[in-house]
Amino acid sequence: MDDSYYHAADLPRFSTIGENRPELAKKFFDWYGAVFADGALSAREKALIALAVAHAVQCPYCIDAYSTGSLEKGADLDQMTEAVHVAAAIRGGACLVHGVQMRNHATKVGM
Amino acid sequence: MSTLPSLLSRHVPLAEPASQLAALDAAPLPTEFHTALDRAGLWPLKPTALRTLQLNLGKMCNQTCRHCHVDAGPDRTEVMTRETMELCLAALERSGAQTVDLTGGAPEMNPSFQWLLEQLRARGRHVMVRSNLTILETGPHRDLIDFYARHRVEVVCSLPHYRALSTDRQRGDGVFERSIAALKRLNTVGYGDGTSGLRLVLVTNPVGAFLPGSQVSLEAEWKRELARNHGIVFDALFTITNMPISRYLEWLQLSGNLEAYLEKLVAAFNPAAAAGVMCRDTLSVSWDGQLYDCDFNQMLALNVSGPVRHVRDFDAEALARRDVVVRRHCFGCTAGAGSSCGGATAR
Image (cartoon, rainbow over all chains, first blue to last red; front, side):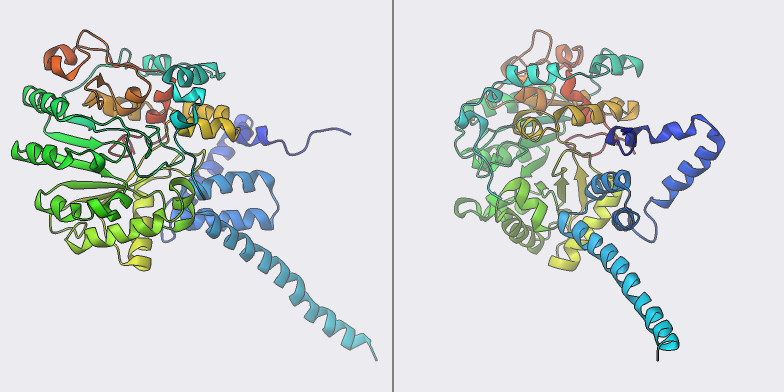
């Protein structure tokens, strides 16, 4: 089986995506940098949101990047664990709330 | 989380500076520090005007923090004598330095600490004391906070995080709680209120193998959270990068982070930070009176270059002509926004 998926060494090579169509990559990375700057939300809060989303979208690169990023921005392991629980709660809740759809449909077609 | 005793007391090879330098030199790095300086037009690195004399009053400390670059601890007995302090005072008169930065170990544990501080203030120098906070909560030193206020000393305190979890992991069980108690007492006498002139600075360094975040951003977080949770105020937060030496080097090795950490430091080399490194305007004096470009070189036994090696021979003009001694650990001061005893050196 081809061993070509998800290598930690690929994370620092993210910028190589700009080797083709660099003008598109530049737009992305400029915007990305601006998104994570201190604003109405602090850089730490944004890093924790990113960490939670990284778990929700299950991206190992993002989990590594924002585990370090959250620590660098001043979060600790308690805060990071709470962020992951938020992601898990939303994913779990999103699943469960579809149960209403199930119930609606079952009620409609059932006897 | 309990911390390990000093490297020296455990008789491990890394207790020796030569062993630390060898471990750093063995790591595969894409470039050497002097090469990076050369590319930035800064090689050889020359001093600027001397602003700060940093006196390391000894390796004795009531804590054994996991990242300590001094390998300080309760078992260490090296302390600066009154005689060496007098040599430092004489050197200070011959230097242009207006600030004296007292560090250790816990500088408060030196028996002549208060005498030295009074001498420095009588000479009109600005005095900074690097305190680990918990020492101010121990019996013999509880009165120091009033002493500091009376002598208008700037207090620079270590507090890696505004919560207990990370603070205690790095500095030992119960350190956070005692640090908060000391900070509250400092606030009580006016430290950190922004109007008394009693300046209170906190210092954070990463609890792990990563670089500190933006000093401006972290200062805002620390101020908000310490005020919200403990009613504590302070003037400024310094971010300091962990130097890959001594006990932090041991941790990097044992945790398998050494090479990646060094690579991170090299990749983050910032010419602007390199231009502002503290070794250009600071001289470091060890407990036994030897001269170094910085406290880190001191711990690696890398004396200043040139003929003047001891504070008794202090010669400001000769020292101004020296080249600063640099090795691989220096990448720690030039990474990202830079790092110094005064925090970040570049934006």
